[in-house]
Image (cartoon, rainbow, N blue to C red; front, top):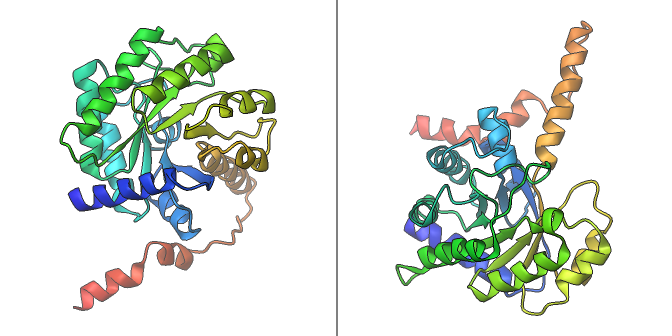
Amino acid sequence: MDKISKDHYLKFKKALSSKKLFLTPGCHDPLSAKLIEKEKFNFIFIGGFALSSGQYGYPDAGIITLSELVNSTRKIQRSTSLPCIVDADTGFGGTINIHRTVRDLADVGVAALIIEDQQFPKKCALTEKVKILNFQESCERIKAAVKAAKENKKQDIGIIARTDAYPVLGIKETVKRIKAFKSLGADVIFATGIDTKKDLEIISKYKNLNLMLNITQNVEFTIQDLKKCGIKFAIYSQSILNGYIDTTKTILKTIKQESIPKSKNLSNDTLGILDFQKVLKIERN
């Protein structure tokens, strides 16, 4: 996977030098990744919430293991030519665990991974159960990830430092961590929970930062606001999963009412998305 990994990483680094905002949908399986690629997005986000829910039936509470994350990521990355950005939670333990997490995901060929400043095991950032590492321990975690990425002198995976400080400790601590994580060598800073235009403008006034934000239906700013503030990545971590659940509920209610569900997508359409003709061609040869 060395060449693929390097190509994906180079696309990620090229994105950082552009002035473009990259809208990045989150997926939870190979099929959703293929649909994202079909719509010609530049990157795919593999989020812990969607992956844990969609592939393992667990809540986002630090339950899935590193091996499960790597195996699921491998399946998704193999299904698409787009670079993937992967949520690696807390790195699955101490310094040596972070080291292994970085190298294992680099071997899969992803473009970048996200390491956050929650205590291990983490909890979904949307809950009231989030516990944050102190400032020094948070910095040590990011430092370990950056070092692991660069250890072989030909970095092939980006490091995105995530802070969940905003909803727990407020905007001042968030800004402090953003600046510190940047100084430690993180390629991108992901600040979770930012949902007001005022706080968006506060975090974006610091120069030379590549910032990532999560977009939910409750944010009080627009995509145009993100562009004006120079945000680099806007990830939609749960939009596809939420749509999948909404649609599945509707179909199940239709079946329960003894009616026949109707959909725009038909079986042949799905075969087309999965490139069934390529399979047939291989078999004929």
